[in-house]
Every structure is written in C-alpha cells, then in structure tokens.
Length: 109
Image (cartoon, rainbow, N blue to C red; front, side, top):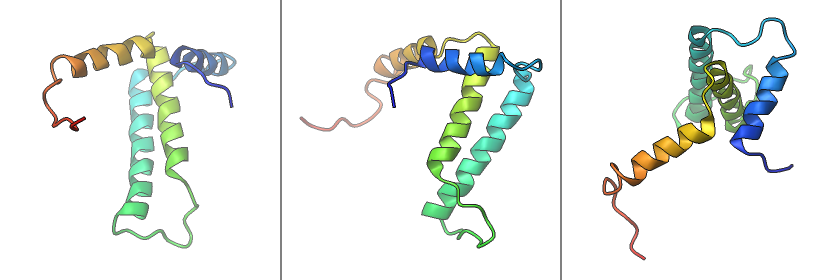
C-alpha cells in the first residue's frame, strides 16, 4: 500500500463521488451519516472493551472498518464544504502546541 497525503485522499474521494450525478450529500445529511458511523464504532468498542457481548447473529465488524467508514464520511463532509483537511489539521495542531501546550503532564526525558 502506498503512502497518501490527506490531499491525495481528498482527491481520491472527490474523484469517486464525482462519477455520480447525486454528488455529495448535504452537510446535514453528512453529519447524520457521520453520527451513524460513530454509533457503529461505539458499538464495536463496547463489544471489545465494554460489557456488551456481541450477539451470535451480529456481523463481525472491526474497529478498523468502522474508523474507515467514519474517515470516508469526514472526507466527504470536508470536500463538500471545500475544506482542506491538511490545513484544518495544521490549525488544530497549532492550537495544541500553543494554547494547550501545558495542559497535560509531559513524560520526563
């Protein structure tokens, strides 16, 4: 598997969605889809780390699959709003490295 930048991934998703007349869903519909995917991820986490055992009739899903589903919808959401995720990531890291730089206890070196 080759390494991809966020820009590459956003372009790949845009090319995929661009082949369909429907295009991207509305932001509200994408938020609903993201919430649905988050619920599916929460269910998997609860099966592995919580007290809720998986029913024998339930399909075997992995957290990797559920995170992938969430990531895809997040990229669709960003693309539909023309948000560059690399820039969005840089903004949040700047915040963590400035405003929140002393929020957590650092590991002693």
